[in-house]
Length: 569
Image 1 (cartoon, helix red, strand yellow):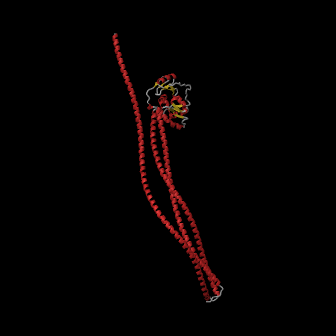
Image 2 (cartoon, rainbow, N blue to C red):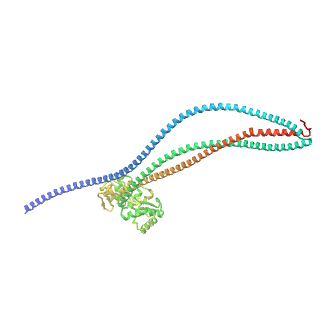
Image 3 (spheres, rainbow, N blue to C red):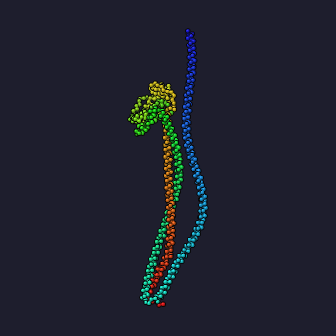
């Protein structure tokens, strides 16, 4: 029986060793399989991340390619228009150069002819002045001779008439009566001639005054014409400058609109990225909390609460990791407390909760700073193995120090799980490792694999970065859009200014032409007045004056004859 039992023990022990060997082998294979599975999972996750990054990059590159194609098409159109314009301007420039060359040749010939004409004009003027002086002397001598002739003729006529009256009248009395009647007739004729002479002299005076006025008016008009011409030339230059400025502003406007369109596309892409990041971030929190967090900004604005004084946002909005390696530890220590909302007082929290409840917008945990109580007697251990999580891992605003102390109260950062377990029991505090393993002061242990892709802080950081990128691009787009609109307004203003200057130029050109026409008319009137004055002074007044002088002589001779004896034949 003992032999049988020994044999059975030997067999069982052999089977046990064999089973243990197989079990160890299976455990080794399972461990290897788990390790390879973990490696494959990590590789798969990395590949998935790479695919997502590649897809994102592909989307960005595709949109950039689309923008570049549109920009290339616009540039090709601009190039075509520019080449066409350049060709047209080259032809115009060539034509203008030919015209300038032809004009220079014509100018040289015209200047030569002008010099010859000026020489001839000077010679003719000198000869004219000489002849004119001789003419005036001759006319003076002629008038003198005509007066002497008239006097001699009248004297001879008077002698003959006196002799005839000696025969015609029988007595002196009859003759004297006839002479007095004749004297009266001559005086009437003299008065008529004198009136006519006065009228002609008055006309001559009026013509001389008109000539003087015409000369003054012509001088004034010519001075005004010079001023208007100078103004017109200055306006031409200003209009050319404004036109060049207008074309330059059109190019600026075109570039501004292109930049604005490019920034608008980039801002649209950033908005889509931001919305995706917001969606991922909301999925990292409970649905009711996500609804409440989404509605709070609008409610805060409607309630008139002041950011940074009455409303501070979520806990994760008010902290910043000192190093990304602390991300897992902070998340393990805080859990859903990251989504708690910090406010100044419980009254503010009550107002916000009332709105959420009335409008059925989810549930949110509020942390009123005036109601938070933190144990001031807490003493954290001084050791190289553990350190306070709050002081080591995060930075925060001193305004929310109570909330941070409440969330991270009695929590330590440990080197590893063994140290965390020992210090949790020793210090009666929660200890967390960098890998996220949590050792509660009550004895519970929490640990295992942590998927960093589902990290709340990471999702929040991505959302914050996407939001900053979107807001920056949106601000740049708004600035570029404002710049483009300003460029559009500048183009409109310059176009209106060019139109105004063109209208002013046309008006000024019409005024110049009107003044030139008036000057021509006044010069013609001046020449006519001078001719008429010369005619009256040289051809009308002298004969009348001679007639008056002759009549006066006749009257004198007749008066002398009265009372004398009759002359016999």
